[in-house]
Image (cartoon, rainbow over all chains, first blue to last red; front, side):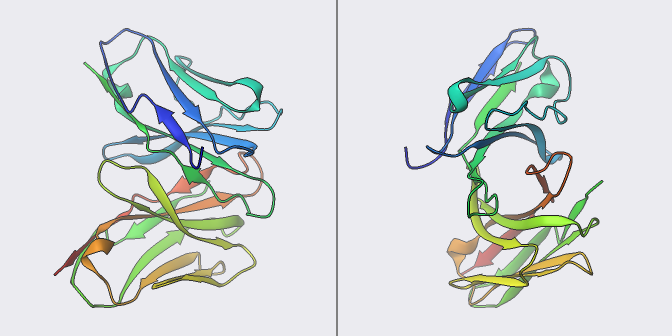
Length: 115
Length: 114
């Protein structure tokens, strides 16, 4: 596609349930990032995939959060046993490491509400 | 640890004014600095990216500058229009460690009144 896409656009879940959020990066982009935007907290980095290298998980807030990237393209962010404080907009971005100095392009986000 | 600050948090101007949004960062060892626009309920739109070796970038009515020595970047918007109303975010990308991930300021919410 022309840009980064994310699904679902909105997700409402009950506390304690698991959720999966999906990101389709721009075709050919080797780097993929997940960020979280919480009210009053701003945007914070969660996890970063670059090609076939081991992901940088340094931003994940707890072991309930995990992500994978299959075939170097699509990524899934999984939150287990969701808590109310997980409510936020989850944004995905991708970038090409060639010639664009790592300019990141963002998807529209998934708004997660944990009741 | 890199920290990014944006001042002011909100700004309201009449249509046609030129304005400057400010961004400061604590660690001058940045790889690049990127300015984004975010409309309510939407994702981020990249406006300008300044590489660490550059001092400014221009796109249409927008001009972004970078001064690494003082840890500052500014986004200049000329002849503002109501359609420029949005939240503007700056973000720095650092060398080393989590190379590539962006560290964001909390944004400046701009309102341009007709």
